[in-house]
Image (spheres, one colour):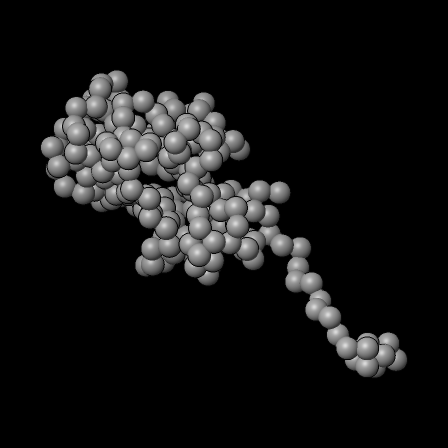
Length: 195
């Protein structure tokens, strides 16, 4: 069974409205039903702003680097309620998977990447809602304790005109292993154990 970790706490630099409870916690990591709730980052500062989202201790180490995904859903608007269009061409959204003080994964989106920052909610995949961003095996294997991971969101609009809206953040991992299989043993050892 797939494991999911979703935001359970919020630490803000003071430039964000709402908290982790407004980030979608549905069971469907590609669901779009919660776009009415979001955290809002105030890009009018013209400098980089930061939001940390704690993740619940819901992932047991799967003992594999395969099939890890980081989903986040975002849009940019020049209005504080999200109803306006994007007016800046110089916004950058960076999402990091952190473990303690160490960065394990970094994904950066701007107005020229695929996907690009725009004024409609979009997933961090070329096809909206398709696969999120797959972690490489090396990135996933660099996590030593899933109990200590959190999401760091950084946003900057050097033109100081647009706000960032994040409606969903989900870390997905495969099911925890059922245990470590016993390796082969010599026939002599087997006979000794049998007796």
